[in-house]
Length: 618
Image 1 (tube, helix red, strand yellow):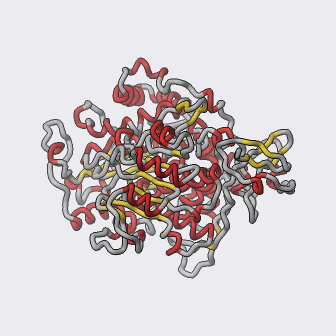
Image 2: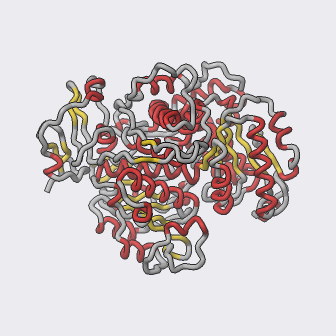
Image 3: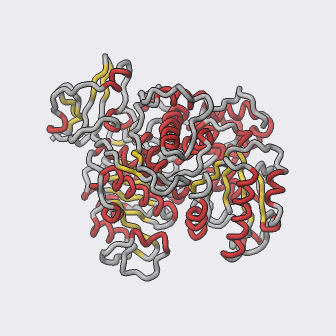
């Protein structure tokens, strides 16, 4: 039986990608809200903004039809204020996403066939393009940023993932001129002095790594500077942070990578990583120095090892404006991908059973935000919401009977039989979604993916491991083994493919959709802290923005080529949350520009973005 794409005027339209029921498809006309009337010249996905006890359907505004899938609207729930407010403060509600107009974009079937034709002079290999772009940034910054901003979707893979992985592995041998700040154990007692000696003092954003877990490549020590340098460029590309106010930092605390530290070309400390006590004292000196030097700076932790990542975040997140992108940013983009997937296949988030392959920073961060969303938006208890998420580590399913579990895994250790393999877990749990964060390639094999397709009409399969060589499966495999029915998102980019005459796009769950906008909003509001709810707000805003054209080809995100417009909407939503909760202040010049629907604040967010023609002291 043909599936139905619902429309509001009582008609039906078949489309095989949407599995709507006739009841959802045929409905009486519904009144157009005041929000819709204000935007009658264009359309936005109402499903995130208007309440209903049933699935929302397409609204028609003027001559433009607003096609909607079956993403049920989130329910508002009280949310305790955190991060510096007095205990016992009144509960606040997370606002629903502001209306979003359809981005101006090219037809999804007319995307450029080549990613890097304009970089052909750089050389054939991705690492050649990486080095070319670094050299261009140093010698012609205006041209570099024009190239990056005008071709973000094509250029960023050579500035950050997946190419930056190879760059970090070879950082010590590529002849790279470092543009960030190294702070080593030898700098103990003088970290504040080194910060005050940095040539540019008006720093707003810092990305810091200790190099212990670079992507899925392991301990790269001081070579991790490449990850901070690459990541911080995304703040400018995606959300318009002035690059002269961005500082990449690497904490050089040694490395346990014996081969690397014994290399004659390696420039970092040639010692093993220190004890927890010594490490914690060093990191604390760094954090306290930051508070004195730049009290309102945004600090992003990047690629810390599991053991330190959770401890450092837990210790400082209630005192500093900081977050860990591997834990929280990855959670935000993955939640957005899931909510986008439900716009295609229907159903509520709290009805999903989600199985993670991997149980480290990313898995625990994603599972925590997903269960938080189920609890706050759909009314599940905290315990019940966590029971919708299962983790697998190298020893098998994470279950309550195991005695070897690390602290961060225990909230997701359920009373279930112990199984060792992924295929056994899929057979037993019958998940609606599998999420790969294992950094082990080819683990979503044909048997696993075909079983997911037997269990689900539209299986959700997200191989998120970076770089591409570590992806749990390829896009082509997921499409072929599900006969084109997969709802897919990956950590690294894959090219679109044609299968049985239909174009299928491979949406990349790129954290750059989330963290630059969150970070810039925090900078603008001088946020005290960045609580978990901020990433829920950002994820919901992003999930509402994919157009019907994008959904029809399997894209759960709006096109990355529109990233600055997307970021402006997310920035406005996050600014509103931070201001409403007292965690931040209204940005200078934004007063009196708020209609209550976020439209003017999106314009203000766009106006706050730096461009190559803006003044900057690079």
